[in-house]
Amino acid sequence: MTILILDDFDQVITRAELEDVCGDLTTTGLARLDTLEQNAIIEMNGYLDVRYDAVKCLDPAENDNISILKQKLVDMILMNAYSSITPNNIPELRETRGNNAINYLEKVADGFIKPKFPIQEEEPTTPLRHGSSLPKTDNYF
Image 1 (spheres, rainbow, N blue to C red):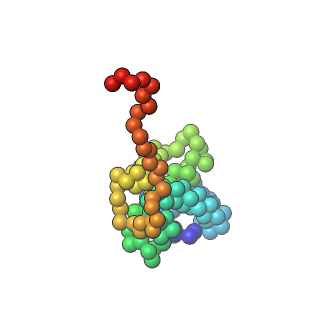
Image 2: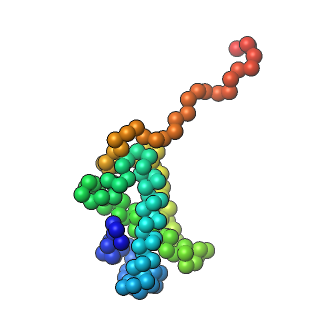
Image 3: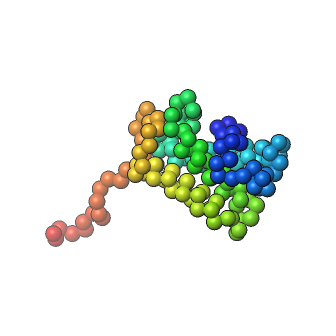
C-alpha cells in the first residue's frame, strides 16, 4: 500500500473482519487492499484537485493534516470492499461511513469546508457560470 498501513485500518475494523472481507493479509489480501487503495486515491484526487494539490495533500511530508484524509480513505476502501463481495448487503455502518467520507470530500471540493491542505498554485478549475436568466425576446419591461 502506498499511503496507508495495516495499522490505519485497526481504528475502524478488526483484523479478523478485514481478513474476512479482503482475504489473507499476507498475499492476496494485501494485493486486493492495494487495488482498493489505488481506486480510492483516484476518486479522492478527483475531489481534492478542484481546490487543492492532491499529490501534496496525500504526502505526509507536505501535509500535516493527512490523518483526516487517511480516515476518509479507509472508510471509502472498506465500503468498496464490502460492495464487491455483496453489493446488496453492505453493512449499514460501512455504507454510512463511506458515504460520509464522500460527502466530506464533496464539501471540500465545493468550498464549504476549508481544511488546511496545500492549495493549488494555479487558479481553481471550478467552472463558473456567468449571466442571469434567459435573454429577453421583447422590449417590454
